[in-house]
Image 1 (tube, rainbow, N blue to C red):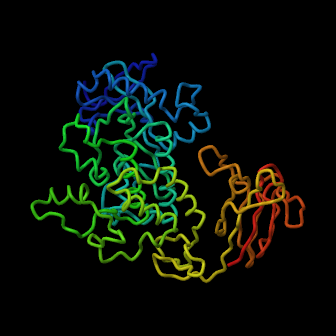
Image 2: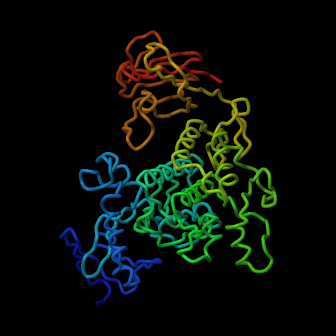
Image 3: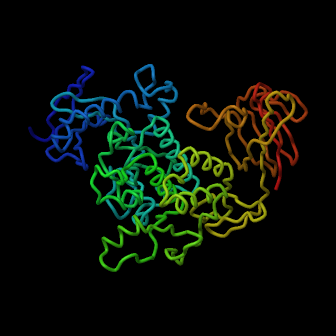
Length: 491
């Protein structure tokens, strides 16, 4: 065979798939990859023939492609409880295997990454990055300086990436799965759009059924895994990748997205014996959070923006993850907790008034001190807050506070802003129902298609109609079951 030859793979489903042979295919730790002629799919075979011949490995792959698959509806043989709608959603969040290859040897078929996760021609004026995949470290590590500014996004997009990743991990864990190697290499991100995709799915851990195949990637391996790595694999005291170790890697990635630094890599020297031992202790048994409030031994001198610059909820979760839970896995926040708190922080985002601020957005923690922590610019323009209230069940006309959102010019409103029983998750409709505009020093809410929206006077608000949001204005977002009230407060 020679480069460019078209070969045929036969799948266990009976379908056939052509792929292009390469004498030097891309090769990872476990598999090498060929692509279909249109490059829409990757056909992967195992580097080690013993892995391909392992009955346990084959059973794992078949289960991942079918009964554990969140990108396939339950009716189509996918994950339990999965609808076509949620399957569609998670197809954008995972690069999930879609088929099992029977011949010429056992392997898997995966969709290739969406185009947005590859660098384009103008990604860097220094490095030839065109066609390379967008691993997280390009944006959070030292190589960030080589990228053109247009690739870097802003703080709002990095927060959006964090939300998407937390949601993806939550979905894995709800299915009883663990990724086992969440890292900068296995999560591709696009800060221009705030998108993320989780890759290398075929090594998922199913507790008490499929053991981990890998221990993880440096910087993301949980401390307890590193601390017990020298023990025999059958030793009951050895810690292996699982859901709890994912819950260490997840906040490491989130922290990197928001601060562009690693939460454990500080100035502290743990051992002068060797660089390897120092690194092992720093990431493993002696790991210390660089922002630990009770132990400043690993704190860099230049920490200007810290977790105290975020919302109180996110600060609490980072302390829980990297202080309470760093060496005590049971104390780590769940992926669902991260998703919920990141969404609350999203509601507190406000634009920075400094046009030269690289971050463009910040989380408003204190209404009395509306200062961008990244550039120090104080917000001078009036702020508007919408407080959403839900009807107390069984008590018609009696409402309680549900959530609040700081608005900005152009802000869209969705079903979760209209109805108390709809959440901002994969089940919600993505259509914009209304939006906010700042016009002639007035805040306006424009109905974009919400049904049953009522003005403060109780009149129906037709599509395309605007309502002025003055201080104290109260309007009904939807005069239907579970419809919420919104109260405007000018700050």
